[in-house]
Length: 324
Image (cartoon, rainbow, N blue to C red; front, top):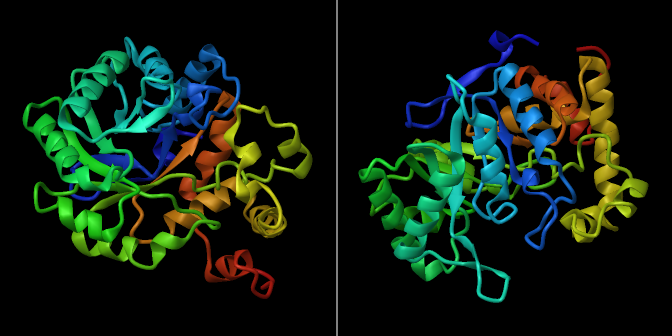
């Protein structure tokens, strides 16, 4: 796969031209108490980032809470010394509490401390996109958003956005400063944002990068009942509802439909699942989590797959249409 084959798009009104697929670094934090993904070797993480960059990916999304700083540290190590580094997006508002649990904090002083820590771990002079991770506590979202606006004014972050906010919350904070981006969950098994949130962002010119477009691995075609049973205990998916009955049977049936479409398109089920999210005109980019170098190229293909109406109908469980 050549770099020129990766499509790009402008992220909202930020002026940033991003590839349709970005590198999600959550799993690089490894297994921990914060919805970890099981063991992960840092050297393999770095090799995976380098492979994605070789193939043309030009942005990485992480967060301070992933592995309690470990993911950002790994990203920083991977980018050290690169002449042409990708855009780096990270998030704030989830911090380690005094008893070891993770707590939500949108107070100004906490956000400022988080930003300082993220800048050091990532080894960058400015964060390209800084995001509020969750709108919790909801009563503090104005204070948290004001802090991000202040960081932008100081030049420590270039653009500001939010993750997991609803329309009412977006309306509240944009009275303080424009909301440049939103990062919501979106996939074939998590479509709630289609009703109100995506239409609102499209009308408002807010850039959208979606997370978990493959349902946290469920739609890759590699997830089976047996594999779920053998997931490490510190992999959050082992205890998630979508990975258990009665939901699991429905999701695995969906995967079989993805496999049929992928077979016709000579690609992978995961790539088709990613392409499905990118087909929504409100979506600019999709965040895909990679853990090994060999995982990157097959899924990046999703950035270039064009699904027909017949493909979409078949994925949804409609009648199979022969030919394309």
